[in-house]
Image (cartoon, rainbow, N blue to C red):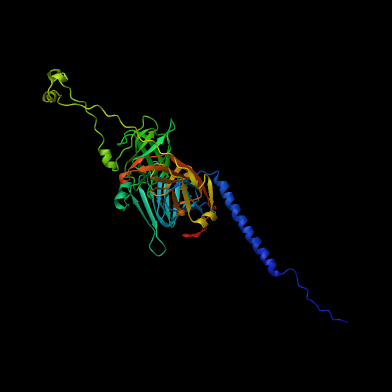
Length: 488
């Protein structure tokens, strides 16, 4: 008989498998529990009035709602609620508006908003960083809690509190009797005026019929500004305001302006530490022209202040000549005059007839789109492989340069990203893709003819096309500890 080998029967189920299953079930249970808490907090907030709003003046501000685990990155004018934990990141700043009070938060500051123990107003628990409470008259009371010690603010005063890092000092609080006293005793940074970007000075816009053009205004951001005021007037002294709007963005679109010369500027809406001195930008101007026989010629001045100071004086009428002199110096028939007598017979001053204004040059035709085609979509993989976007268009007869402009289409209008003049060729290569975010974009090309010193002698019709950038959406941002971020 042959001896058949004996095989050990192996168990199909091991203790390690059971441990792995229990471990992953536990992780799943924890995730579901956290998700439930987060969902319940979201539903509860729908029935709760916010305590105030936050204005982000610089970089990044995070907020954790109630007992949530995940931190949210705040947007401008986001609501804040009782129980929120707010963290102002490094090299950042924000302003909280709570029931008429302005609360300035510096970088690396963590606070929590709670109700006051007496039930009147709110209390700010300062964990780290520096803050200042500007208590407006008539506003609800806001107190500050420093390591369990409550300091109340009085109407019209400024309460400044600071909690330094561990081992670098003790918490400190100081009360100023007025905003003016706070400004005098606290070194306040000098505010830089915003710089006007678009429309460019002395630029001209054309429109046909009654359809006024949509103008995209843009200016530089000022970190300390809580808002911006856009003013447009038909007079250099802004005595005739046609546009006076406030916005938190650094751009705005206006389509209510008609033909003529328009002046514009930006004023800053500043929080209490800085609003004692108004800050405004310089003045720029542009023209809007209606196509037709009554078009307006552009201003050929590059120095705006000089142009504003040298406005054309009114034309004086010629002096009246007495009738006696006219009779005495009347011109005799040509056959009876000598050359000398003819010179004597001329009046003292002769006013030449007014010259007719020459018609403006016709607009150059618009170039044709070659690349990219209308509504082209750029995905992440495509941009990663190309690492650039090539714009091409057809040449226009009579043009020796082209103006290329790129806008981002937002809910508030178009935001100008770049503007450049192409003196050679009919293409532009965009290599700095960091300027692009997920969304829709508009690019324009205008054919122009320039003369000496690059002065534009003839403008053209505008080519306009769109494309879309489709980046993958970033994941949520989580904070394990103050200053440590995870996520995209």
